[in-house]
Length: 216
Length: 216
DNA sequence: ACATAAATCGGTTACTCACCCGATTTACAA
DNA sequence: TTGTAAATCGGGTGAGTAACCGATTTATGT
Image 1 (cartoon, rainbow over the protein chains, first blue to last red):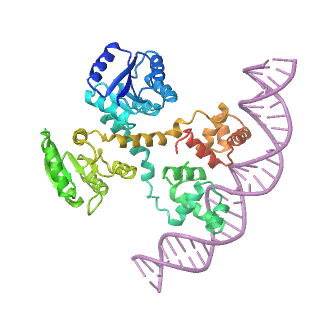
Image 2 (spheres, rainbow over the protein chains, first blue to last red; image 1 turned 90 degrees about the vertical axis):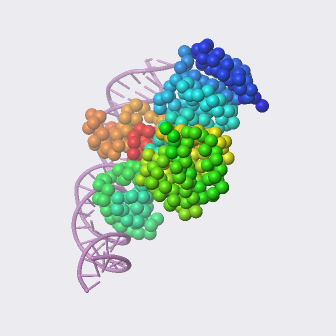
Image 3 (cartoon, each protein chain N blue to C red; image 1 turned 45 degrees about the vertical axis):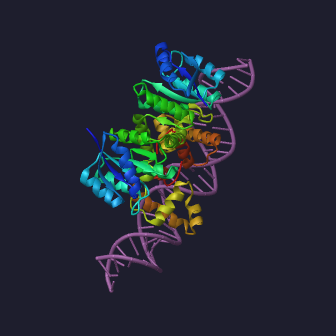
């Protein structure tokens, strides 16, 4: 079963180069080409390819927006970005648009072939320098959740009360669920606020979200 | 400049197989081997390799914890996980431990070589099925930020007031900064709460964080 | 010209909050 | 044994909140 592919790039020379390169691969069949975003969208709807090799710098619309359009009508067609851009910005926006692969034009030809095969198989190919960016993003994004467990000297009971406070419960409600007096809850709250140097329930909520105690 | 590598796996046969495979690559030099986590940590401190090829299922300590230890003392040594596990769980925990690559044992030998070279170059190699997991995680994690801009019919002024409310300001403070009566601020707050079906400032804070209006 | 929405201002009321004061019991460590 | 810390309970006060009621002015559009 051949991989049915559409080439999208506004430069004829680039397309012919890619055609030559990919023609040597018997697994790949180029069913159409496009020099603009609108041509690409039309070609995809007509041919329903397995993979779309998408440039980002197109004359009429960015490859990112083109990919979003494609994914609306033909979500089964995998999109591989092939571009000169190696910035964080373009990379992440292409992922959000629904791309299954991202390969800079400076990459080795074998890497492009790999990316196409991977995308056709429903997986994701990330060029190493960009994989690094994504991992970095993952680590900083989930950092707060992992940075918890150090709750600045709060006792067990205080942490328990904090969880309910941040959830939006009143002193009375918390007292009921924990089977203690609302005044005791208020006392715990005072101690929490003093220890954390916070002065309102809203600051408590933000603190709890930062520490991963509750979700927004 | 050869890539100096340490093999970590508790099965002698696996190590000898990898030794054979990697010996054929002139770029790679195996400087040590280890059959357990403690051996691995000692070997890394002694040889300071460019890359550590790390199994996860070790007898004394998991490869994940071993990687964490390694990264504390020798952060320059890149770790590539080579394992039978393809679960989300192990993969993400290995990333958090500081791995620069993750290759399942079922992968093709060339992919392992690529991963080692990529890791030695300071980049990150992700096997496609796992890259897909990471991209998926990225898309769901950042979904709230992108889901904003649709602020459920709030007027400009209401959004402005909401931002200050979620920041923790009182009606009086907001009135001062916006040069309007605190009663007007309260009125805006009422309208906001009715439109969003929220009933406390704390819920407003969580809403604002979900929508990306403020940071926790 | 009339309707609609937005933005503004005022009053009232029950409730909660944040902060202060006091206290006892329990438990664990110096 | 004598602290110290944690957890519990209570009173009091001024400020703020959430919820209703009312109103006017100013656009914007039909």
